Length: 181
Image 1 (cartoon, rainbow, N blue to C red):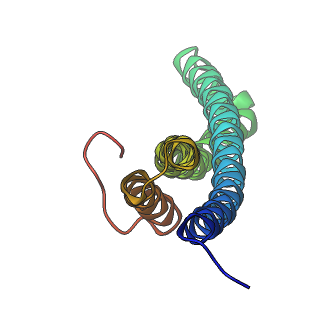
Image 2: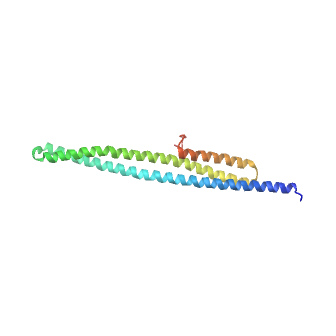
């Protein structure tokens, strides 16, 4: 059986197209993973934002109650009702002090939620850029099948590596890159 040069060229092109197709499938799987991680980070950021807003509202309510009890105790004392209203004044002062202590914990919880939100938003940005890189890498790899040649595949691999690095950095937060953090 004789094999012509044309036949060999055709087999090489076919095997190159097949490996490029497999490479594109791998890129698509990585793209799906990055999309899932980005979605999860966005949901975490939203939940933390809502919880922080709830905590700040709770803090404000405690602050209003603290002010109310402080004013009530002060007014009772100022009106000279200290003798007959002494137990009530003491109760108001105790409640005011309790609210003062509770406010500190509530504020700390709200700020912790803000930190969680900020970190999740940072992660989401890295994932979003990784998604863009993976999509561009898929397009360039697809173009290499049509146009032929290893140059476009090489460019695609470089873009995919950048995307993979961005996704890994989004997951582990190794380095704070400017404009992404």
